[in-house]
Image 1: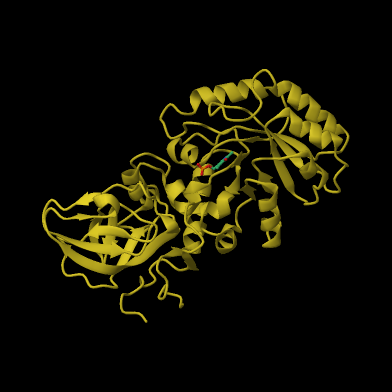
Image 2: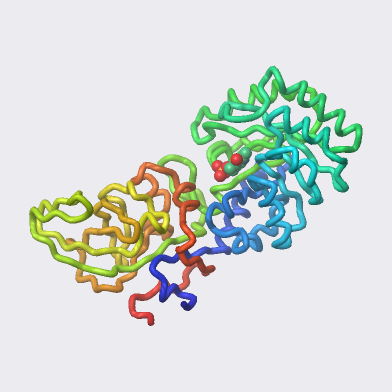
Amino acid sequence: MDADGCGSRVHARIYPDAVAHNLAALRVLAARATPAPRIWATVKADAYGHGLCRVLPSLADADGLAVTQLADARACRDLGWTGPILVYAGLLDPAEADRLALAGLHLALSHAAQIDWLAAAPAAAAPPWVWLRYVGDIGYTGFDDAGYAAAYARCATLLAQGRIAGIGHLNHYGRAEHADGLGQADRRFQAVTRGLPGPRSCCNSAALLRHPGAAQGTDWVRPGLALYGASPLPGIDGAALGLRPAMSLHSRIVGIRDVAAGARIGYNGTIVASAPLRVGLVACGYGDGYPRHAPAGTPVVVDGHAATTLGAVTMDLMPVDLTALPPIAVGAPVVLWGTPELPVEAVARHIGTIAAELLTSLTPRVRVMSARAGDRPPQAACR
Ligand SMILES: *Cc1c(COP(=O)(O)O)cnc(C)c1O
């Protein structure tokens, strides 16, 4: 298999340069606050499906990386990242607290047992920072108004004993994409942390992109999705926000059939041709991570022409409507998402999901390769 995707059914092209561009763009947004906050570049879920190893060099300018679990932090170190690493899930169990060996570790703590585990563990050679997570308006996890001060006091004891290196305060917004998404959430966070020393960390991608003043008063922001060029704001694509997509997904036409009006195709005859139909089969299905429930009408690009799916996505194949297109040959390239004509956000909208879900859903059989924007898309004729 060569670098342009020949020989693969479905392949994803990753654009590391786009990640570097997006990080710089987010830094400009963050720098509207004074002093400018630092950036935890969120690389959870293998860098939102882009492959940490592929995008890490593009994140060299980030101040820290944020991951989900401790094992991911180790992976960052193994790939050569020497800066701070924030672990959103903190500690999963006491055994993790016993094995804190990484330097530069920052653990988000969300419940009291995690503090118990740290207190009971042997003192780490390089004590970690902890960040107390406020439950916030998302309300999934974290210390609430009643428990926050006590959690802080216990951590302050660990700090005095030298068992941790510092204490920060972390809030995660639940509805930052809305005009009124921050006010109440910020007021509650400020109230619960008032008078407590330590840095603050707020702001996901939506907060930075939607609210010019969002980063004011926070020491560290934590964008994720926007680093990869996708927008979390409803109805606004990343390109309109100055972001560049970091992944495009490609396949090809592997079969073409003309079916008569009234014919049924697909399992259980799900698709009924209301008129004579030219059906193209794209070599991509839910076994590759393309959602099975993608409805008819989901946009694709076939040989450079806008087209739509017919629904009935199978494990390996999905039918698209070629009826109104100029002649298309078997082997024609198909873009599933991630080019300027077909942003992943547009595909997500049609499917009723969000870009982040599509990007993180690709399965191991999708071939992934690094590319540069403007590289020639894969050609039908390649051998
Ligand atoms: C995923 C995550 C982020 C980044 O969110 P995006 O919406 O992708 O920018 C920030 N903070 C926490 C706690 C997260 O879990």
